[in-house]
Length: 453
Ligand code: NCD
Ligand code: ZN
Image (cartoon, rainbow, N blue to C red; front, side, top):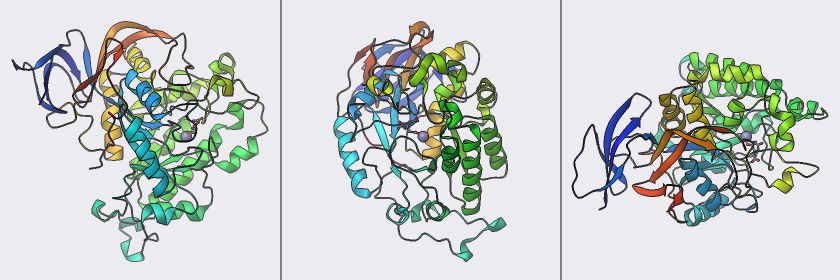
């Protein structure tokens, strides 16, 4: 088996930052120590570089199958690697939504053939599919109620989704790109009370509120904070009652954070994520960006952006919500919502760390360890013996300019022209160097589906 020794780098984990060597045997990290000698190993000199666990982006829309003019599994996962992301979780809002076992199997076959990084698949909730994707038992029995009238969490082994192979269920409470939408209490509650331990990822905007404000002239006013707050409050109440794990996608307002903090303090099984565009852009950028700044949830007021930064300790992960649309679509009379993010998340975070807005360990926590914990991914994201050798080596001092050409098929970014410090130097996926000095060595088919623990 091939042996690879990464020498003299600075290893970044959520717990510590240390000088050290990493020995990789085959696809796996074999040893991490201050100094390793391995005469037969190929050596990568990481002097001056910081070594992060490969980032895991829990929220991407790769459009394949169905809208491959925007992105496909190869271009999307190339964008991931270019951004230091070694695993992506793909969302189900394709033009034919991924809401059945058959659709999931079809996407799996495409991803296996085309992906250049590792991937997990998320299945979509509909008003009808609670039984199909959760197994047959849906209503919790009275004798399963635990303390405080909460439904006891079933042990993982009894989950009936084993052969489903999805990492999560996505529930859209508000309409956005694609047709996935569930608004009524009955199906929402049936998904939450199903005998299944997959986390439910929620796009939390209240659809009645969105309809009410739809006539507003500017996009942020069509989808105001109250829509997000209502949906988060609702879903937290349902998660608390049913005991099901819920993950709030792209949380974007101060008030949502307060709701999540309060629920966490009471022991509700809730986690949350924030998207880079809600950290690094605001309504101040709306006019400049025009349609390229239209996204759901929308860009928020600077006060909300400040609240996100002040509460990073309570935010479990950063995920891109990579949602590519072509330039022509964005420039049309009815521009769709969404923006790409895979190539820019890590550089923007590294630059923010250089500016002392967060720590390097915060980045490792929010882009690697926590996504693994929320979605129960097996042997990923720790720089330790026995884990997949997924590593992103960065040069914190090197300057970047965000500019074309991008790997994403849409070939634009809301951050074009942004300069900063913190460039991706090398990316290693399960022991294979897939990016080095700006060159790609990854082939379609290299990507493997993640496993759950
Ligand atoms: C996403 C898309 O285009 O798929 N758009 C977006 O504005 N974020 C869908 C979504 O996550 O809402
Ligand atoms: Zn969403």
